[in-house]
Length: 110
Length: 110
DNA sequence: TTTATATACATAAGAAAACTATGTATATAA
DNA sequence: TTATATACATAGTTTTCTTATGTATATAAA
Image (cartoon, rainbow over the protein chains, first blue to last red):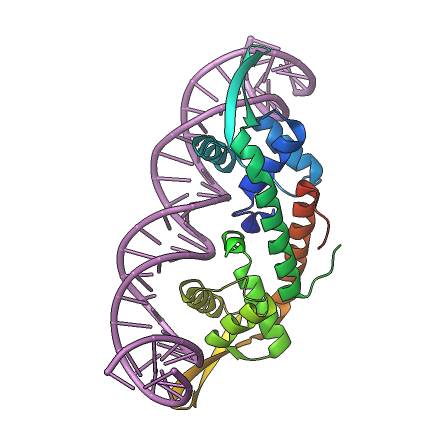
């Protein structure tokens, strides 16, 4: 959908926030959660999601463990201690960005 | 600054909106306006701005004319008819994006 | 029974859009 | 004369998407 062009740069923040709220999630679950919360307007493609998860893991913000459910492997992610600390920063960054964008575009909240 | 990572995808909308409000602006003026409105938090680099302006012109959304002020050339941009029509679309797109981001990140307006 | 859809992971190739660095040029203040 | 501000532009690089593809299992539909 249309908003996806603007997704750049915010996907990491979305992932970290979802993991702060849910403590552990697997990739597919994240895509479904985003779809659900945005009423299907925002779709996270696998080609965007998995590299982002791997990068966050490589950066030490996420850690993983696997579980087998119905003969299918699920790779769960959760925040590391460092990841937990970074969420607040990323969130206030996002909030500042939204605020500035509203100023520039003269938008008011929906 | 930090919010710049999230700028991706919104620069075109910012340019179009500023030109809707000001009818004509030149590149350098746009960078200063953005800096001013965001209290210096958001900085539009030339490497991002000029290619974006050229693309919008190439897409038929902007048109240009030059003026010489103090022996320096200024290249002014203004919305074409098509550009004028697209501003509203881009703005509602941005508003939807902000709304979805606030839902996902559980943010409230500053 | 075969086919489509959902679940679940992953990566490769390509495009979009930013950043950094560099270049040209004039005006003005230190 | 040197630094800063004004004013344009582009080349090379990096980040981060999209699209396409691949593997594999479970389940519902035809």
